Figure 1: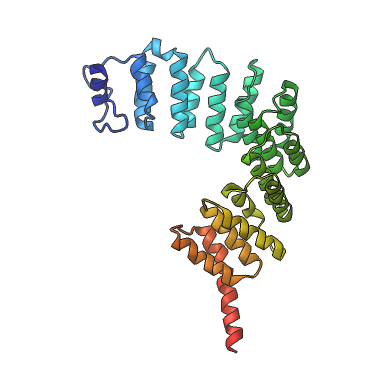
Figure 2 (figure 1 turned 90 degrees about the horizontal axis):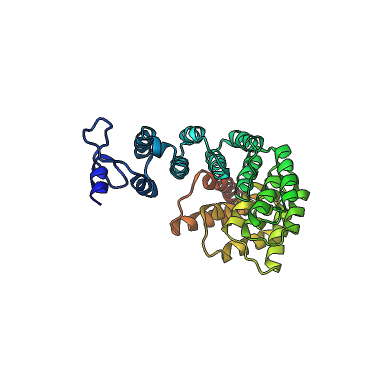
Length: 322
């Protein structure tokens, strides 16, 4: 305990404020337990880099795979994929976990091509991806629109019998939806032995992202027939496709919105957009005011959505007064 206190005074973690200096005389001894303690406390990037520099000069700690994994995860959590890669490249005896952490770090920081390259390297070096690898790689394919890689991965998971895995199935639905292969996405959804809200919302999003608003709403009705309640995620998935639609669909979305236990900002924006796109300016303006009464701060999407309603109301008032 004394050792930890001594080190904490030199090495800021969480609440520590005194700066750490590599030139500080009589540095406290650094041990694996101490490193683990610091890494378990979610250190910030400055603290992490100082710890890393201490680990690098200790051969025993530097070659410790458990610390290597923790260090990579900590850098990834701080949004530092370059430093994560630096640790990754320094590990001589890698296993699938190291590759998974590296791929996830790239994906979470929007470096999808880099993630796919690490996945390719992993295969070339004879490592077998697992059920943690594939969802991340599928997300990289999904966001980057890389259908070819997605198809290769789908074939691989079928051979391994992993296509029945919930998270991999969700990743496939999302990937096919983003790549405009909606029939393939729906086929994957229908063949999944177990589905959760993410499964359904991914399919709703696939329809919405491809402008098929009516199909997205039809799927929402299917969910309700199966006793599944559309949630804020479902509502948010509709936003890209909100367009002019039937009165029945407007009433359906309105009822979906009303039933939401927790209304996110995106949910409010969807409902406003539905009213505006169906020439219902009074309802759109009323809802815009209501969201602020409920303590929800409008964003740029809210404002851009409601502006046409202001124009419609102005035109209506001009017509009535003439």
